Each structure stands twice: as structure tokens, then as C-alpha cells.
Length: 350
Ligand code: SF4
Image (tube, rainbow, N blue to C red; front, side, top):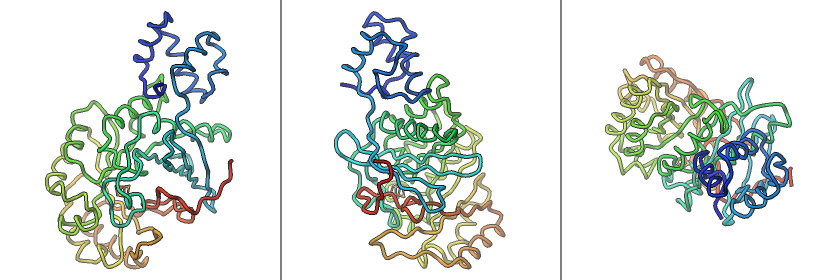
């Protein structure tokens, strides 16, 4: 059996044609799932019983099982644990802010980048997710929000995994989420975050897309970057920056450079000055993220005053800087804290 949400509208319509059904049946089915968040064939009452029976025997729906939800103390961040059909698990996060409901999705089980500060990469890559496994993270979260009268406003590929290592699938997901007959989310509200896969960035330059791109820099030079992100050994930093410049030129969208500040590793004033020299003149914003504690790692978060000084040097050097307010730290849902074996989950939904 194949997964329904791995299919585009035209692919599903081709199946309908083989079944002797008109094109619009494919639109009806997708509307049930994307617009009404209905995952039970028996409730798709605008379809004949015979068609519902054939659909249920041919297509898998849903592909994810919601295992647990954990909510932060301030109730602004929720972490979802999903069971996959092969028994593996992934997490996604819903971040609530005034007028903004962001879903942070995972695109792989584990991650090949193995960043030194991140829980997700500790066991390396186990497998890439399929399109339906990513799309359903968004749709099930939307179903949760439906009960509160809210709508997913942004989707960010910042959960577990490296999106550009699963690019065919990620592009399919972007297209289906942004299809007006799919989830209907503007591509300008979709963000792909990467540690830097040169061929992937070059391919994004050639795709007809308008998504935001975030680059995980985390160090002002290649030598230190390789220590923080083992995966960075694959591509020279100058070539990645050149490819990111091309992306900006092509899409007119500025790049956000993420910089996780780790005490005594990359948070010194000399690092800030080097960062200014590296990025001066780029159309970009630097997003500073104080390191979030991960169990078993000996790294430390810098003091607030050190972060402030680091930021001041960047701003005086002419860079645009944001300092990400950390959300969901108490439920290990903050940046770099999603893990394969979430031991501290509290079950609230099942
Ligand atoms: S920070 Fe992102 S890229 Fe790095 S290991 Fe974690 S999930 Fe992978």
C-alpha cells in the first residue's frame, strides 16, 4: 500500500482515472484531508461507499500516530511525539506567539550533521522521512489548532534532520503545503534551515520556489565550524557563502545566519569580530541562539552579559542581529534539543 499524502493531485487523479472515476474525485479526497483534516475514510461522506472501500484498500492514511504531547509551562510551546509505521519516532514542535502559529517539522529520523550541541544528531541518520510523514506533522498539528480556532501560519524545517539531504521529498512537501488546493500556505511562510549542502543550495537556486533559507553557521571560520559541525568538512565555507549569495540574488530573499553561542567555544569577542569581517556587506540577518542544555553534553550557555557584548560587536560592525528568545526549554523542545529517545515525555493526550 502507498501513502495517500505522498501523492500530488495529478498523481491521485491518474489513479482515479484507472478506477473509472472523474478528475474531481481526486480534488474531493485531498480537500477532505488538507482542508477538513479528516483521516478516516468512512467519514468522507461525499464519496461513494464503493470508492471509499477501494481507497481504504489501496492508500495508507494516516501515516503517523500521535503518541504524546508535552506542553511548556508558559503554554506557548508544544512538543509532539509521532510514531512512524516502522516503529521509529520523530518529534515536531508548535510555537505560539501573538498572531503566529509556527510548526517546526522534522524531515529525518536522526541527523547526519552531528552538530556538537544537538541532541538530534547524536545517533547519526537513521532514515529520511517520506513526504506524507512530514505533511502529516503539519496537518495533525492543524487539527489540534482547529479546536482553538487557530491556523498554522508558518512551517519551518528546523526539527530533526538536514532538509537538503532529503531534498526531493522536502520540495514535494513544500509544493503540496503551498498548493491552494492542498494546505494553501504561502511559500513565503515556509523556511528551510540547512547546515550547508552545496548541491542542495544550488538546486534550490534553480527551483521555482520562494521559500526562506536559513544557514546554520555557528562559527566565523571553517576551522572552528568543522569542530562544531562535523558535516561541515564536506564543503568549504566560501563556496557555501557564494551559493547563498546566488540564492539571495535569485529570490531577493535575505539569508538568516544562525549562530548558536556556546561558552568559551565560539562566543568570544574575537569570534564576533571575525564574524563581522566574514558577513559584512551580505544581505543577511544573524540570529544568535544561546546554547540550550542537552543532557549528557558538557557544553555551557554563555552569560547574558557576554551574549549582549557579542551582539553589540556585531551591530557596531554593521550586521543586523536578532537574539532568539528561547522557547520550550523546559520540555526540551528548544533548538537542538529534539531527540530520538525522549525520556522525559509527559503524556497528556493518550
Ligand atoms: S542542529 Fe540541526 S543540523 Fe545539527 S545535528 Fe541537530 S538537527 Fe542536525
